[in-house]
Length: 305
Image (cartoon, rainbow, N blue to C red):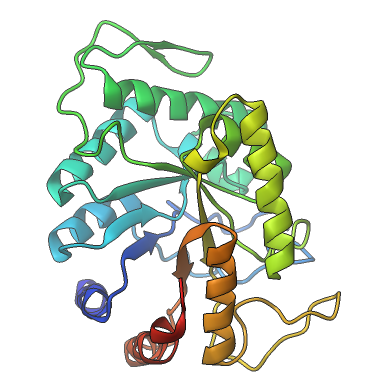
């Protein structure tokens, strides 16, 4: 609800949180194949209600509710939305927020939702995403943008105003597959994975470090400076839990005591991670606010970064 969201962001900024992340689903099909990427079975009941605010509309609202925090799509499924209009919406929010937008981008995983919103073919979502990112950059950096691709063509138009951020809002690529790493290496300003994919688990610091090293190598091969790609991390599963052991006997990253969480944050900073997003959503608003308060009191002062 608007009231709950306003309370969360007001308290979040007061506590010193610097990013608010917004997930993306437009509609939820009543039935979809068990291909959810973050469980071993591909099944999930997380979307049973279908209740989700549209992320760009919500981001625009957050721009008026907040003062300093950056606003991140976490992540926007690019093939769902026509790219010229989407680029204009991002640019508008960047202007209205004073330059606080981060365009978190992904390819999507739910084929039935692609069909429901009349998106381009699911099987070609990788190429579509690449073209849309290129189209965004053209729209954001030229008064008279031009781009020619299979899925989008831009010519003979004016595109003003540009975003406040120069050269444009940072583009963070979500995902932990090799395809996502290659896309980040070629096109991304940041890498923003979730650490719980069974196929590519990033549930310990060494595992994340190895994947980050692969990204650096791919970025260099693409002719870009690896240091130009920001490393971020999305702890969507974060809870104040007892330690959890993973398959190699190590403790699961960012699960455990507040002291252990602070230690993990410091270790991630040492390997180049500049920002982390934590999930404080709980069954009630009061519990969510309490989780934020506890993290701010017990973890943030001890996370030496």
